[in-house]
Image (cartoon, rainbow, N blue to C red; front, side, top):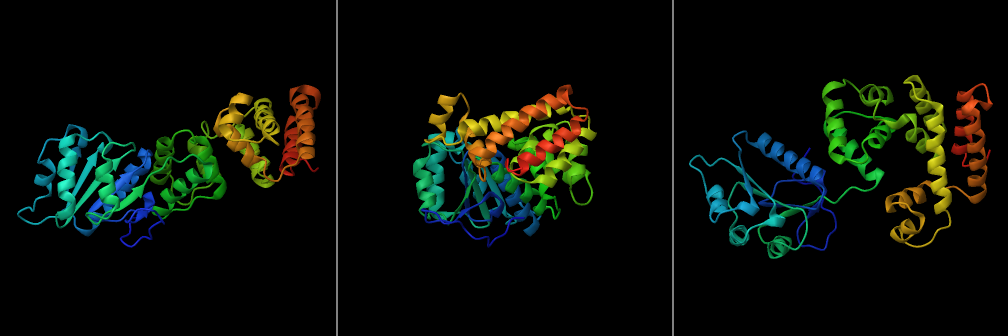
Amino acid sequence: MAARNAPAARAKSAIPQLAWNAVRPAPVVLVSGPEDVLAERATSMLREFLRAEDPALEVSDLEADGYRRGELLTLASPSLFGEPRLIRVAGVDRASDDFLIDALEYLPATAESTTLVLRHRGGMRGKKLLDAIRAGTGGGVEVVCAELKKDTEKQDFAAAEFRSAGRRISASALRALVAAFSDDLAELSSACRQLLADAPGDIDDAVVAKYYGGRVETNAFAVADAAIAGRHGEALMALRHALDSGADPVPMVAAFAMKVRTMAKVAGLRGGSAQAASSLGLAPWQIDRARRDLAGWDDEGLARTIEALAATDAAVKGAERDPVFALERLIGVVASRGRR
């Protein structure tokens, strides 16, 4: 929930820079950065906070690129009954000259009981306005909505969604949920909201599997991810969930093989991710992920794991009677990072 006295992050600008979930009221709130989902959540939290303080809050929306002179000053002018006001301006990174002129005029004398929210996704358009806000004119704060690229950042986002609603989600369920929607933060946010609305009590692996069993990749990559990270028990649990939901052992081994092969390619590689990606035919994020996965591994462990993968691949394709046992054996090898 928004809080008026949330601590500000260290920044070069003269005004507080806040995380999306630490947004607080100020005469001017600059919501910057490319991550629209975080910007929407921050703006919604701010509206809810202001409305909780005064249900008579008036909310107005403007488009900066289609703006006409005088609209901002008209909306911010005192009303007959003095209701507090929230003015949300979208597209400041595409703002018309008329909007920039009015906004710069408004900053030195902001209206009382009015919160002006400016959404700027990035770029040089409106730089003079941004510089003025960041220099402290208008008494503003900046909510930084940078793109979430790392799984840990997305897990923090999802955890904050549940925490703000006063609900708990287990660590393994959180990882499974993020793994299912890691490519789209908007879908991850929607999934969190659905679970909060429809699933009573705490959220665990079984709840996530019930709602998103077809999306949560416990039938492949989530099992592999847990094992590669050394979480043996979690990997076995994910394997059982996957098999109970009808997962086939063959593609599960393929998921292990894909991740371990990428780790082997990246092991010992030097240079930036972009340069390495072009030489290996991989995306930069795959290089970064493989480098994180390699923590705690050595060359001998990778070699033994590759041998175990070959044996398991043959086992699940008919060389052994019990493919499930073969998978469990492989998880033990991987979770020990090839040391057994």
